Image 1: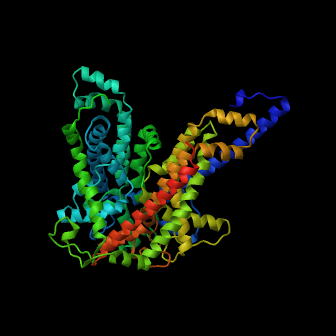
Image 2: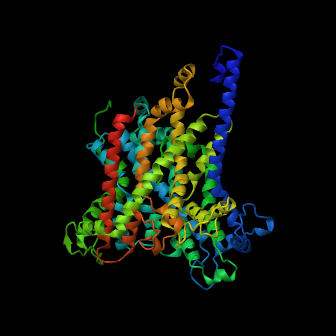
Image 3: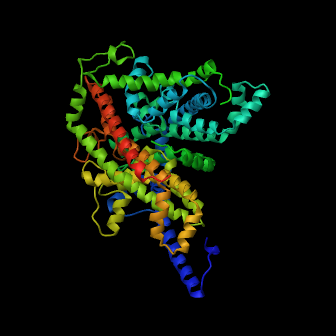
Length: 318
Length: 312
């Protein structure tokens, strides 16, 4: 550390200090540019989603950069259209479904997280605490499935769901991804760090293994379990491919595929929107994007510490 | 383990919930899809049941693989995927490493910067892909073109049907890098913070330059994290698809139509899944198996390299 460094003479000390200042300026400049690069898409999303159709059209025609629009160029109409649809008659994105997408996503997230956590705790417990034949073989087999691309499962799962008649049902959205091998692995690691002495002590007190799991292991592993809950909820909010496969009805869509379909519907420039002055639909699209992003941000602000710690220890996405 | 007595039935009880779902939705599908890829002209039959073998097919063999490998759309999907992987993965790793090292070198505002850099992780891939699509957009829209115009450049069509393939390419790369930095920075930061400060103090006494410290101390000591990030990013990049369609939309034009189309291997699989033609599932399944083989080969190569280069 700089304060522990001793210098031969004053000149050397000065040179060292000067170098450090230059280096600091360079570092902060670099980091600030990076931070602006990270933030620009968010800023652009929010500001564009609030622009009136007139302001946006004008901007397109005059080809001007308008990153700081004046107050009269802003409106909440875009959000009203995204939430309640643009047309009363046409059935294309007309049923006011964004709130429905929210409700669906929350329901699916809560149920699949609950099932994920329960199955994960029980299996991690079996692998960490219980003795049974073929334990290591089974565990290796589980880990091996993590290498396999999800599309291998999705093809057959799709035919399974079709044959069961489960298209457009919640169970299709919840059950297929309700067990996570990665979380089992992650929680088993935590369970294994619990000292064996605790188990012996609990046994003396007359605890059975399941009571020990409930009274000792789960409370000790709570930080890991909270991380799993958070990551699982975020995963549900991000789910896109599978929901797209199994939902065709608007009332069953989740936020991500609802948003994608909204995008598709705007690409075709529906007459109802043109009549409302929406020659360009960037503002509507990004209002939709913000609707999907906002709950995640709120979630992040509340659980920032847990999320960042959990992600750095586990690390999964996509 | 002190108690050698087996808890067979307890284990069965504890594993049953996960096992039932894993068997139905993970193990069975892997085997079934594998068989499906060898069943030429596969077609779902009503009431045939869950097993692939009970449905309609015209023969057993490598026909599906032959069809897929000779399909020009699949060939371009492989090429596109490889290009995206080879460019985006090293770029993201180098940038995130530099950012993590810079971030680790400051004291004031470190938490703020770290939170800002983490934000892209807490987003929805589709939602932010749409934002990047709008930021680039067509020749007369989008903030990027307006900035280009401000500096006297010529605006371009980046994401429309008229966009050139190599212009669209940069949109995908910028989005992929932006989206991938957060997680890598976090992992590198936790690695950097666990490096013993003594190494740096020793280097300081010797008057070693910053660049040399980075190259000779930081990167070797960070090699386990770099290996982990490299393997996971390669696997992730080979599966890219959602990011691409969130920028351009998933119209027919981006599935083997227009010249700018960036169909990927996974995109090809979903294209087959969306078509009800005879043998489409065979092709989709074959493509999925080929993707699995590519991922296994790449991971094996990385494992071999790691044995020589990673210091634990």
